[in-house]
Length: 550
Image (cartoon, rainbow, N blue to C red):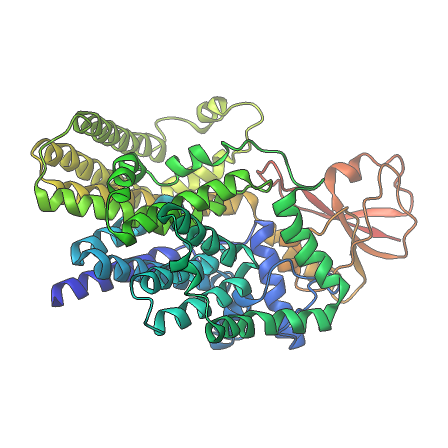
């Protein structure tokens, strides 16, 4: 028992450690910068209901995630730093791992709980989102708690505690990302009722006091937000964010219903290779296991049919997948099952992984010591690809020892996977597989993340603008807010709009616009260039220039 508790704590700590490892990287994505600006507006204005970021913009998400950022910022100096922005995601990721472990322990035993937690904490997409300063992981924590509480309520309908926990989690899910959280749980409950051919087990869980508790938690903020911002709040969060996401709209890109299929598989490797067998076995299992199948299936179908699609939307079903795969692995380990027909294929994948890792050791060595010149590597980059080869070389040289150690460890672990699969040592094979994933995650966090940040950050330009402009008037001559720039410049910057090919008739002062637009102006009379940003190696971020209207 004591050893199992220590292992569970180690899994939770591992999730927290990996989630916070890249917390200090520059913010270059608009989604992260937007949430940081909302939290900063809360700190600056004291408006904890619905502050306007950049002075005029209504937040697009409810405030639970921003409240967590602000609380953390107040404990660590009072500023919304990149680490303060990302800390709630790391903490809630650790909470999700804990919930999955405890659910697995309660429903299937310690081996199920620990293996499910291990699968989740070594799922690539889960680790990626644990490092991301956006609302998704906070939503997943609330939704996961709601699913676990619902299963407990279905198993023991006379107990009150699961119903109140369900109500609290549903209310928090509403405060994390709106109706989508409770909607996902409701769809799973509906799927369960249909599969059982009876709605009575679900309907009898709807009781007055838990319902009132859920309404009080979520409805209180929605009521205050409506009173505070009125039609602006309804238009932004109810109509635009939720209505268009479900019903479609002009700004929603058209994507195939199969959009999530490759992302489900690739974002869950290597564990999604076992998912078909885990689902079949799960559907034949007890109530919690069958519910986990519906939890994953209804979420996947819902997001596949919804017009708005983003890779992170698969995150709420990752805990269910982890439970299914972990449960299946636990049964295989218990039974000491003989090698099946799929084992040779898995051994081949392990061998290929070892080859790739050893190839990585060789590549790092060749590049770091200069045996392959930078010019030769630049010629290998496809035309149009935005890659800062110099930044990649600098990072490889700085982290050469770590990369070689991690690649070697991954290769060794992959070889162990291949050998233990052949000997039907399933537990060792699972642990070695997890080791390969952790090595890969550390390389992604410690090397890939910093390289991407260095290539795409606008921080140096924004800080230079702030120093040069001071308190003088500053505006954006762009169609939209340059959100990462706004975060680092640290002040309200009005958006004057895209001027087109001709200089606009603006008052004297400083302006920031796209370099391409500036170079295409037919005349620059009365204008002068002050600062240029370095090139941003990105397909969606724009190079900026600071100009002055004389």
